[in-house]
Image 1: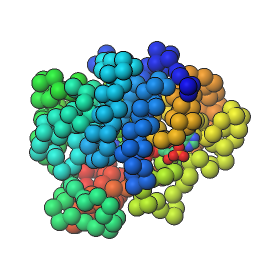
Image 2: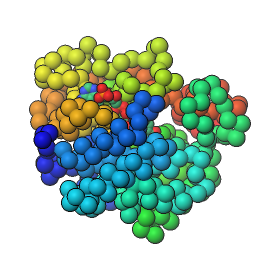
Image 3: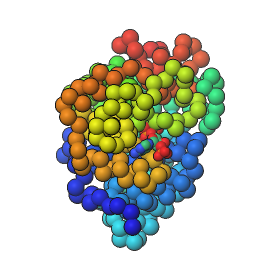
Image 4: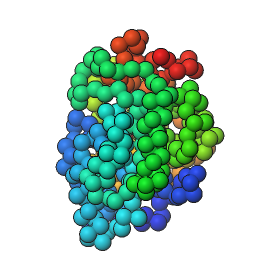
Length: 335
Ligand SMILES: NC(=O)c1ccc[n+]([C@@H]2O[C@H](COP(=O)([O-])OP(=O)(O)OC[C@H]3O[C@@H](n4cnc5c(N)ncnc54)[C@H](OP(=O)(O)O)[C@@H]3O)[C@@H](O)[C@H]2O)c1
């Protein structure tokens, strides 16, 4: 029997809603490298070793396989539904049909309701799976407050209908948040965005925490096996930064665990992915032991290289200059 961690021992993070959720979750994006069966087998193992939070998405193409795993765990009495914290996301091509997308995820995941339901990207720009980074969909368009609100209002309706408990946003920028937050009836509970030592997004992090919105950090290890299209020659490998390696050596662990400890101690919820039992168990266990010192935290704070890995080129509209336009880097929404 593999090593188990008592879920009660996993530290919790409190959302503004009052709900307390685990300080780490498991990612489920198999990318073009891992099959739905491999990912769902890892979810099955993760539940049994003590994970209670899972980051799913309709567009990952594996929710029905993961749902079977959830159902087995419920049927076998390993967990009850209320003990899991299930997050999923509406994909860009369903922004006008959010309820349909949510119901499909609930059906596929066999979970009755969603704990935290994200708008995966703040615009409806859609690209075909596995398309090249240069391809532009002629239907793609810049961010629109009205369009975003239409999608968000549908999420607010889902809260009222009891299909979801909380709303999340993802891949947002401060200018977009400034434009939409005052218009929302229900404040988002969390924002999911890219966070790892070489990409710390301190300003966005501070903005969100200042508003009581919980940061959830994706690619917390720097996603060494991300899709080929997201790998650029100039990218920094977080795991190979000498400071990360030195801290890892001092703790006698892989640098991946240092990135996760840093994430938790800084205040974001990391959602690391691995199909390998040894790795996903240590990703959970490292939250319970041997924290980083203040000096180590300070050292990692200096490692930001502004190295965005998910550039989002495939979502660009025809007149867009390049991927920087998606991220409002000058402090205004690029149109
Ligand atoms: N909202 C969004 O737009 C968005 C975008 C991207 C990702 N996400 C979410 O974030 C999750 C995490 O991102 P990610 O999967 O791209 O990247 P990640 O978690 O940063 O990196 C995953 C890779 O790290 C390695 N790893 C994991 N634990 C390890 C350990 N203890 N020691 C050594 N290596 C370890 C794994 O390698 P092995 O296979 O060798 O274990 C795996 O390939 C996704 O699964 C998804 O749920 C969301």
